[in-house]
Length: 322
Image 1 (cartoon, helix red, strand yellow):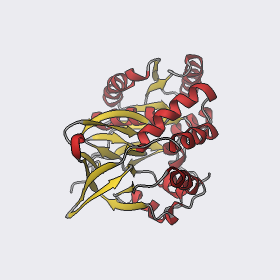
Image 2 (cartoon, rainbow, N blue to C red; image 1 turned 90 degrees about the vertical axis):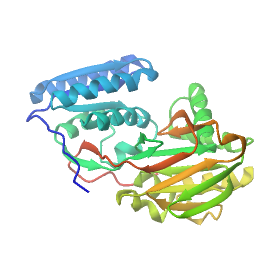
Image 3 (cartoon, rainbow, N blue to C red; image 1 turned 30 degrees about the vertical axis):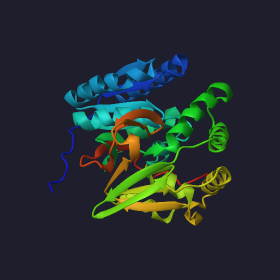
Image 4 (cartoon, rainbow, N blue to C red; image 1 turned 90 degrees about the horizontal axis):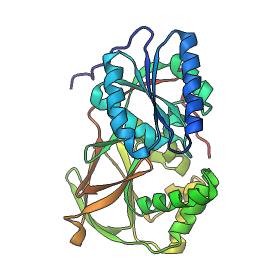
């Protein structure tokens, strides 16, 4: 296979920036000003788009990605993992270089690639960053950076978003919402799984596929490193009661999920998941990097043949932390 084509960058590449300002325009404008000031001092140009409605991010990111490619610049996403995923997908399609000023509740993408959490420090890290190819995942051809899932996990994210409206965005609030979801009623799905020559039919409540080493290290899974080796890691949760789900959530939070017999772990490059019964010909709800979508089955999880060209901090990635 031929090596991937490296996008061209100007000596002082301009930034084309997409900022998710849906949760607060004032904060978005403040970050935009930080970027303008930093780039002005560095002798670089900037073009900034503040997006007030989350549903517009993908369309605006496509336009921004084309501009970044034409100007030999960098497409920069500002926001949480969902925002970065949408902007990064546009960069891959356009053949543009991508970078980030990360935010959000868990910020797995930014932390795993060594981006500082403070916006000023992240901006400086990008200005002095190095270009490298980064693996991304796909579900039915749509890009995800951190994880994608079907079943219980998308419901957990939906409940978490409602919980945030009342209690705000924080990791403790996210865990509280998760526990409430796990104590509710859940659907079991009869799934047909195919991975290479292996086929299996089983009952499961969720299929979770990850592309982020840091997230799996937090869970305590020994296979975490496979996502740096051209593969993905899938977790399939077999039927378990409500108390069992709460126990599994606590094991994950404590980094002991490897001890859970109820979870099957699969390492793969391509996994097909086909819900059986009346679900077979219908669309199903999936979650990708914290955002929900509807897709037709079968759901095909695989490694994208095209990498993400990421301008990332030159130092080592962030150390795992709870």
